[in-house]
Image 1 (tube, one colour):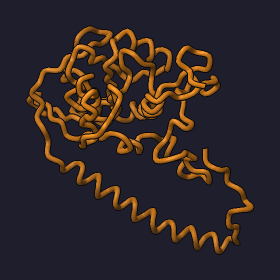
Image 2: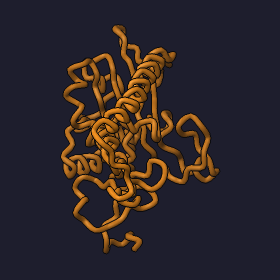
Image 3: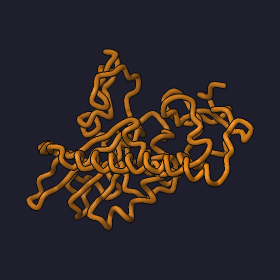
Length: 260
């Protein structure tokens, strides 16, 4: 973690000087807000891609199709959760799921459904969901190409080649599953369109804890670029001793896989 903030090393000024500095920063913040609004408008103007493949998912109520995930609404956000058949929940996805949990009721009252999709089998998803206390719908694409088609899961032969397509570029990625968000729209005739997708640090703005941390003197207090594994843990593991493995999962101290 980064060095602690010290009053001895930080400039301390009068109220008048503080207000002058704060007004200077406020101008930058307002410019950033306007830029964010321009980017959001450009995002909505992106062309759409019609979905022609019939994706089927496993749920507690049986098999459902992509159209069913809209739950009567016209817009759908899919959270690609990294949970896969071999691993535990990932700290980054847990961080995002916690934020989604609070936002869900507001989204659903604004014509937006939000659903998590993972490649893990349904029983594994249900166990993780119960443990974490999440109520967001979470379905399995275990028998579907969905995760592969939206470039968040990669077949072993792709990884063996040394590069996969993720976040709109080809890169050397050594893991089978990564995170992201995909957005869909369903028109009155039932046709579904892929309208947007974001991955990696492009999804940071959904993490409300980051918004609060960015207001504080120490900020995110992370080593390196977006390295949330420095400190983020699944919310039920903060008081447990352990570490984050190279694949983003918390490993308890004393377990067979813990690297001390």
